[in-house]
Structures are given as structure tokens and as C-alpha cells.
Amino acid sequence: MAEGANRVDEPLDLRAGVVGLGMIGGGVAVSLARKGRTPVVYDIRSEAADALEGVPAVVESPADVARGADVVLVAVVNGEQARSVIGGDGGILEGARPGAVVALLSTVDIETVRELSATCADQEVGFLDAGVTGGTQAAQNGLTVMVGGPEDVYRRARPILEDFAGAVVYCGELGAGMTTKLARNALTYSMWAAVREAASIAEAGGVALDKLLEVLEHSDGGTHPLTLLRVHTAGLELPADQVDTYDALAQKDLAAAQRFAGSVGVELPIVNVVRPRMRAVYSGERPEPLSEDAWERGLQMMDRIYGPGYRDMVPAGLHNPSVDETVAHLFADIWSRPHLTVRDRRLLVIGATVMLGRQDLLETQIRGAAAAGEFTADQLREMVLQMQTYGGPGNGTNLMFAVEKIIAETENL
Image (cartoon, rainbow, N blue to C red):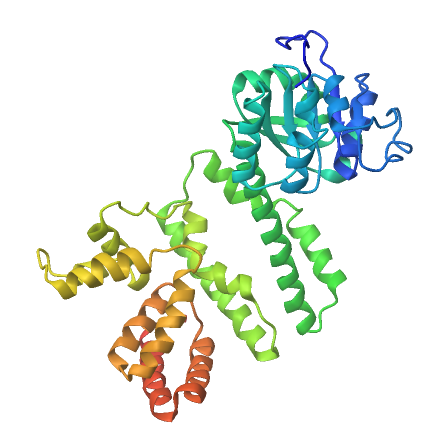
């Protein structure tokens, strides 16, 4: 921290600094200059500011930016670079005055946000996680900024954020801005990937992509994917009968897409994951939080895996070592773990169960998969061939009988 520097409390004329002059940082600097708030800037490329309208030449170090700024906007590539320019040699904290604010525009993980905030706090410097979206509009005051951090720190930095952004949304305490950005990214990338799968279906059927695009532009207007989010955000719910109707249509439509894709050798990994979730998409429901109590958590997982009401098959009050191990460990501790979906774990369990030769257990797993809409009939039959090849004809036959039994008793599989 700069020795003997005056403390920054509530400056009437905030000075801005920008570290990193790539697409985001360069655009931010141009937008600030256009507003009359010419920033102090730094980039490892000495010529980085030469083509940026109204932006002065870069200074020698991030510390020099901090010496001339009250709010320093950091727009680097990743967490490692952020650590370096904030707390490294010649970093922002070497030049920052007490009460200055560092706003991180880069997308990093939440652990890095907390680490950098603590590093700044040690030097009496405020920190905001301020992820941005709309990068191509950065130089036209077009970014949306999602801010997390103490509200008083946000208020100090807000005039500068508003000068370069089109919209500034205060999302909450530390990490809330980055969490919002991560959620937004998940939606964006999933939509892009879904569009790619839609294009694969069209191409496989001999449809020119410009025709698909024409239909989407006329029928959806680019806003349809957000329709349900708007409904749920307003605190509204679709009536249960509409959820049933829409989910049935979604199951029919997505199953048809899966069957066609399978027939032409096109993989639809997103559709495979999305189809079992469509009821929750329409209803807006979120998975019930799992209980802290191991027994109750195990019963909850049994319902998720095999369908609502399966927990009732465990007799009330029945406790013996075998049942306790099954409910309070297998379902409570193993099936509930993160990183693999229920569908992923079910595939592994089906493979192991095939080798045991237990058709009854196979029927239980496949019936649960059917209830959750995890597989189409064609996918289940393809599973039989795969298992028969690796597990032998006898085990494959057991799986085939189980699969065909469940297909016969399940509508719209």
C-alpha cells in the first residue's frame, strides 16, 4: 500500500483505473473516456492503448494504476493473472490507498473471489466481484455488470461502474455477482449446445441450416427460452394439469428426436439429460433439499431413483443391520454424492447387476429409469447389445427380458 497516502472515503470525483486492455478492459476504458472519466490504464503490452479512442498510454505497473485511481477495474484472463496484478510484485495493492476499491470483471471461481477479497481486506482495500456480460458491446457502454460484495463498497464504486456499463445489478454479498455470472454462463452455453444439437437433427434429415434459422427467427424471436423463467420469477406457477400436459408433450417430442438421432447415428447428450428434467422445468420445482439425517436422506434418494413412493417399501420401524446399511449408507451416502447424475450411477449399477445375473434387480433399476424418462426404448435395447457383448449371452439375455418387460408396461417410453 502506498505509504502516507490519503484515505479514500466518499470521493466526490472518483478516479478510475483499468488493468488489462483486452476486449473487455479495452472497451471499458473507451466507455469511461467517452463519459469524461479518463482512466489510468495498464497492460503487459505497451502499445495496448494506442488504438483505444480517448485512452492514455499505459503506465508502468498495476501499482501505478492504483496510485492514480480510486476504483481499479481488473479485466484479465483468469484467476492466476488476477492474483498477480492485485497482490503480486508491482501489483495494485502496492499503490492502493486505504478505502480504494478493486472490482474484478474477470470470470473466476468463487474460491478465488474469496481469496482475493481477503488479500485486499488485509490492506484495507475494498473488493467487488463484478462479472460482466455483453463483451462485444464493451466499448459502447453496453456491458451488464453483476456485482457482489459489501453494499457500502458497492456504493463507493457504483458511479464508475455505471459510467462504463449499460446496466449494473447489485446481486448481494461477496460472491453473489460471480455466482450470477456462472449461472448466466451455464444457461448461455447450454442454449448454444442445444442449438447445435437442433442443427444436427436438421442436417441429418437433409434440412438446410438457413431454413432452420428462418423458422426459429420467425417463431421464437430469440426470447422463447426465457419465457418460463419470466413466469417463475414473477412468482407464478403453471397449473398442475398444464404441467402434466406440457411434460407429456415434451416427453413425446424429445423421445422422437432421440429415436431419429439414433437411427442416423447422431448423438444428443443434452437431450438425454434434459428429457428427465422437463417436468421440473415446467413446474419450476427444485429438488427437495436432502435431509441432514442419514435415514431420511436415504429414503429421499430412494424416491428420486425409483420414483415417488418407493420409500414406502421400507417397512416403518424396521431397523436391522442390512436395512440400515442399505438406506443410511448406500442411498444416503453413495447415491446422493455429487459429480455423477442419477442416470450416470444407474448405468454403472445396471452394468454391475447384469454380471450378478439378477433379473429382479435389473427390473427395479430399469423401472426406475423408465419412471424418470432417462432412456428411450431404443436406448434400452442398445444397452442389451452392449451388455451381451461384454457380459456374455446369458447375462445379456437376462437384461433383455427385463428391458422388454418394462417397455411393455410403460407408455411413451
